[in-house]
Amino acid sequence: KRGAKTRVVGVPATIDGDLYSNAVEASIGFDTACRVYSSLVGNLATDAASARKYFYFVRIMGRSPSHITLECANLTQPNMALIGEELEARRMTLAEIVAEIADMVAERAANGKHYGVVLIPEGLLEYVPQVNALLKEIAAARRLGASTQDKITPMLTPYSAALLESMPGFIQEQLMLEQQASDDKAQLSQIETERLLA
Image (cartoon, rainbow, N blue to C red):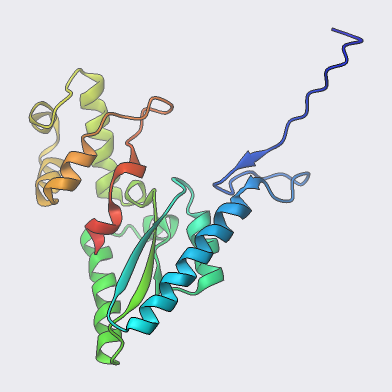
């Protein structure tokens, strides 16, 4: 309606740092999230270095892409930062990721450093090809009406069923949580990836 006194202003906002435009230098949310997380990660790194006996596995919010984790890693210099896109490009399996973490811990221990910080993006599991396939199969089974693990598991391919069975019980339960209503994907924020990898 012309002549209305109401003005509407659109402000681009996203915590994921995935808004690309020459007109938008930075989005509201991303910078704040990175600063807050970096402060917390820095405090954990200080605690780890002081106590000299803890490894902190920190799951960083931001489903996809891994921009917040990457920015926090740039600001805090953790001992390891897992970047989903990088792991996907390398086609790493869950076992290979765990082995890489274990190698880093062993190498630090050999140097007398029994402490450190590992950053893990919330959406990491979607970037692991074998787990991503499992998540897609679980979603497909749910769309066909299966709602519990005992109904979903027989609908999985043998490979995905074996992968699911190899995971700790608490992760199996979390993978079976109802899909997000917004995009019909797994509730990655509810999956304790840091416990799975620790």
